[in-house]
Image (cartoon, rainbow, N blue to C red; front, side, top):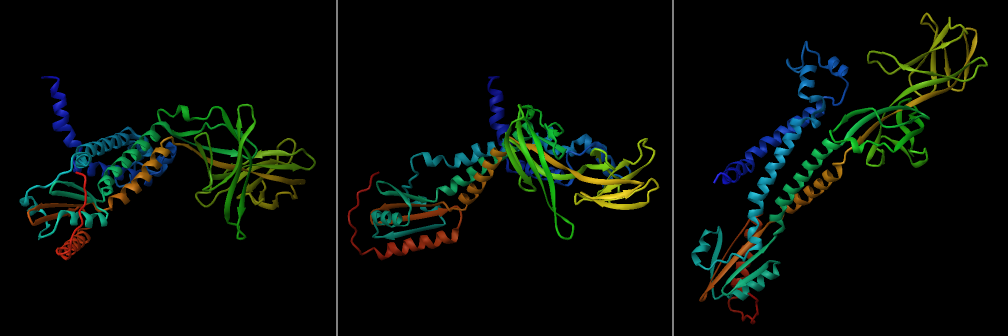
Length: 453
């Protein structure tokens, strides 16, 4: 008896609660609300970013400070335990609804067809009629011409078409379960990284920003990436048109196994990992002072208080480093500004050119760019895309009307009735058309028809 209690609780209490449409709507709204928050609030940023943009005083909306964001996990909504719990609970609700309602509604499809053998049973139909001197064989032939699937047992007849319309909602439910499964699996096993790599450098993906608890196997350990070249195309007005990265995938021995040029909306995919062109920067400048060897000097981003992007470096012009000049660059077009130690603009120079400054000849050989790559791996994407494909198919299937007709012949009277789950007006027209054609056939002889029961 005690063993039956959990089973009874599951069937009589828990299962009806999970299958409740109101619970599904509440869960769906909660998922939508938190998904919106994950879109509005920047995800995966450093702590300093949230401290600067979401201060405690004044807090956004009076309560939303960086401490609240970090505590609730709103800085990585889609990987929090409570968001995954919402997805799992919503999936359980869909599953319960599918098995307790949708599949039960289709049980008749696998059973013996439900024939009506009493005239009073036709009174429950909104559309029904009684015809004299019309045979059941005439109804069968007419319905077959209208692409109904017809079944007959003695003096009773059942016909239907559009069964795909009944299967459609089940396909929709199954597709939503696949989408949820893909989202959960991606959150548990996927990762996102960001890399800023100078031209000519080789790197392994290591700067992980977000990762699921089971993301370890997805991290690439047996291959690396070399940035052969990074460049930017500019419009005639000097505005960035597109930026490109020529990337090579290298095996553990340093041999090239793949090579692609990527740009925005054209990523590189290898081994389940996708590398997107996301950003750029200036890494270094190569210069010569008088007849010196080429020097590569790193350039650092400067604080412009949101007024643009600038990078700068210091070039010594005396062997004892007692004097020098500052080089400032704003893009990769090659023009650099030269400032002395007092902060005065003294000259400008372009890549491949030289200028006299501080008593020396300064030649700029090249401005070296860095490519900003966003690296993602999401093993749940194939499952999610399959779910979206089934969702579109299920929605189309759900628009097909499932129409049913019953007929019963007793003596010289034919009883006929029908119903549909949608497109009621179109079904009424078809039903009236059937009655009209049957009335016209009353006096016409009907050839014998052999019908298997």
